[in-house]
Image 1 (cartoon, rainbow, N blue to C red):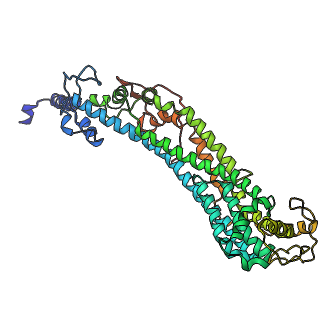
Image 2: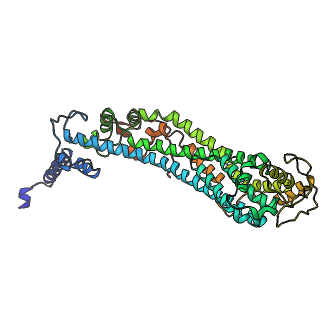
Length: 476
């Protein structure tokens, strides 16, 4: 029977082969005229309602952006959805890059402030240890004034309307009555009370009497210079965060949006959901869309240069770190100066404030109150005015006392201001061209094609060999 139906084997095989070919052509033809892949991409990328995508391509579609001859899987409603989607995706990509830079700036702003507060706390403890160990009679009474000084310096570094020089001068004004009654002329200590007229008089005449020599002025100058750079850096970093926040308000024009739809989604209308834009084409579209943003390139470069200058000034040779660590040394020198010139200071104070002293006019200078070494009361009286150099014996004593004081924090502290500054400058260098390089960043990676063919906006073309320098930035 079977032979009757198919008398020749070769003839029967030919029939089956022909049938298989016809079936394959029918399957291919069905797939070519199906919008299944377009519907899948439309759903996965959350472009819009799925019912807007037709099951099969239409031949007479009135499109505004993705116009081409032949059947299309797009409709006018889909084009509207594509415009919303491409704006959302592009702005998200822009914000993701700007967020990295904003995080870099805000993160280092916080890190610098934390380092400032650490150095202030260390310096404050350093000074307190001096007063407790070397001048115990002053320690408890000077504690509020020490706290007030470093509180003012902290506020200044955070941008508050505080004067470093005024804070330093006020500290020494408040210190003078205590030094006078406990170190220079202890005989009147019992008659001195908080808020007394004598105490007020001593505070008022401190700068005229100059009991601490040049040290308050030098200390104020050093702190104002070093802390000023830190303060300006902190304020500049806050402004940088505001600049980066402005990128959240970028508005893409209608022409830009149409160009983005043509670049990203018009290929879908032909069922080409996996084809990627050509690199050069993507760059042209992105540069046009971000023309206003690229105008920030030069101001941004000037801003980053300013950050570099402030960072070098703050962490350089005359750094904030050294200036704060030197506070203890300056205060110690000032206290020694006041004790060494005690008789002259007492005589001047007695004339101005009318503070009668028990000691005779020819009394010997008060020996410094130190626990590490004691200077004998037979030391010669300085015959010169307070502004003149100290005798050689006192200079040697001062050098001996100062040589035992550390000038930097413990090495157990793994992070220093210099290390933090170096890290910040390294990252800043990489972000100098951020606004100019933003189109390149948006056109790299998965957004463009690496294959031999790509989407030109109108058709699939051979991928041109473009040698473009793509800027890569570190992930924060």
